[in-house]
Image 1 (tube, rainbow, N blue to C red):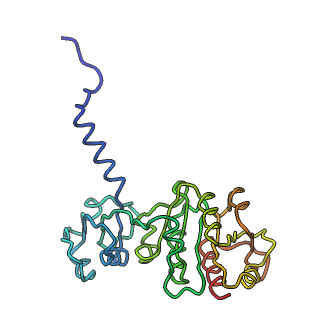
Image 2 (tube, rainbow, N blue to C red; image 1 turned 45 degrees about the vertical axis):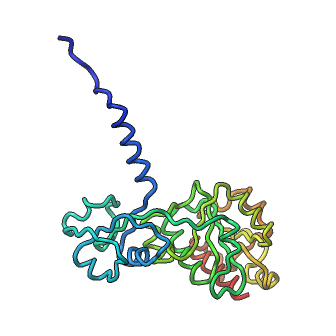
Image 3 (cartoon, one colour; image 1 turned 90 degrees about the horizontal axis):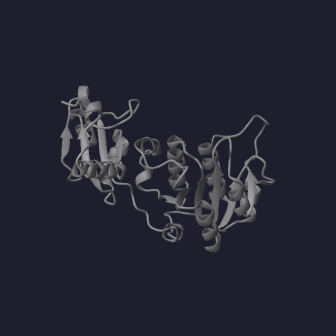
Length: 267
């Protein structure tokens, strides 16, 4: 008898089923932590698929808004849901589909509650989910209409991002576009003034915001280190800096976004 070598080829139906399972998994997100899960449960725009919780967590969550929980033992929670080992889940995880916010024009022209002027934030290659989560939180606090980022080379909607956003991901539009430069040009055509933030900017942000009083503004920030790409800078109408008390460095991108949103909203 001839010895068979290598692995037996899988049937086509098995391969198709595995591909379908991987594709379905790629289209969902696991949110974790009591705050992020509670806010997602309360969001009617969220497609909610599975709620995995410990008995203690389900009591603390309160209203589950009609979804049936899967109660699991705290000792095996990490095996029940596919979360990173360092995730601080507090015994609660919710599988959801990413939110759909609509087109760029729909989001950009939608008035935000309590806004003093139309405000947007655009992020160029900001990939850290903790930074993006913090920026979403600041954008909500200071009344921005949306945070915009490229579909590639940006932080996707993840559990870590949602946890850092502390609920803002459910309310603050986070729109990832195919091409950031084209999106910025579209915003200019809608009447937005593009203000890039960079330490080498030749204009002071507070002074510039005063000069642009009442105008619709899109604040553009780049990743820490490389900053904005050259094409992004060229697309901006202004490049401004946040004035510092001393020459000791620069702000973290999420802190810079918070300061810039505050300055824009006050002017």
